[in-house]
Length: 407
Ligand SMILES: [Zn+2]
Image 1 (cartoon, rainbow, N blue to C red):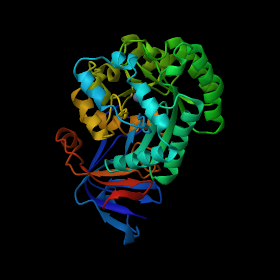
Image 2: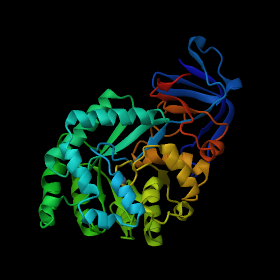
Image 3: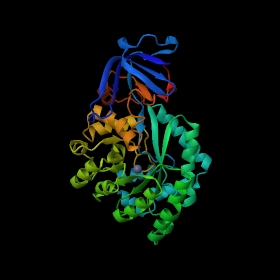
Image 4: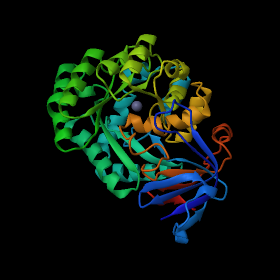
């Protein structure tokens, strides 16, 4: 069984601990068999009698659990660089959307893109993310907004799953916005989502989660409740985009619906935070989106103080978060959202796994968990996130196999 020695520091969240209370072992080693971790600890305590045929040298690097990006919009056609300039010049997200830009411009480009084009884009993006230490990715539909185009995106994710080593968790987001052809017929589009899309997605096992964008210009609380309640009857778990541009009591809605996560949350109210804590809804913060939309950053301390688990993700999408660089999002979570580097590592591993209902198998370095980990060229978590370099990841191991770099 493979053994990785000479790890200067192994840092991992642990099951049941409070956020940021990591296990840190100096001079560590890790042992795994096929895809599962079988031993971790100080190298000097390595059990005797291990087969030393497969010993690898970490050369004094930092070992962390594989990073988990629990919120992306991975499959899309085109980019929206012109909106970046417009927003920086003062136009708002809503103004841009009302003039045909925003999500609908990406919907047009994604509908025009072939299955093969989207698949090769996704595989290239997944591979690039693996080079940053990412081992699990959540990927949403939501740029199709017709039965055929939503299914196309989810089938792209299914194909990407079989062609790449990383875990890809699919989320159906047919309720991303109301497509242009239904602008005078909201009820008609809701009916399409509930009566056709959700049953088809569920019947074909194309998604684990159903998501809904609750915001002015997207879906109301009541519409989201109707859509997500229907999704639950088909066995889908729930996620929500909420309280990003205004407080819509979305965090409370997520708690009422017993959603797994409530994502964005820049404007979340204290009432919603209390409800999320009671219902154990993971709060997913997306600081790259906050940066690009010029929203006031969420003070994550408000959530952590009330006992809400906080995950950190990229929100990778062509409009408001055009970067899949999860360590960049982690840096921003420290500086913009007031989280400690240790809380942030927890947020991009254990808490992100919880936000995908994978907490029992991924997200920490513990015996019995999947052997997903990354070697980082830094002496500590603090130094890694503070001294930001384009890529500090030296190697990525996924389910026990090397998928990037060298060990
Ligand atoms: Zn999003």
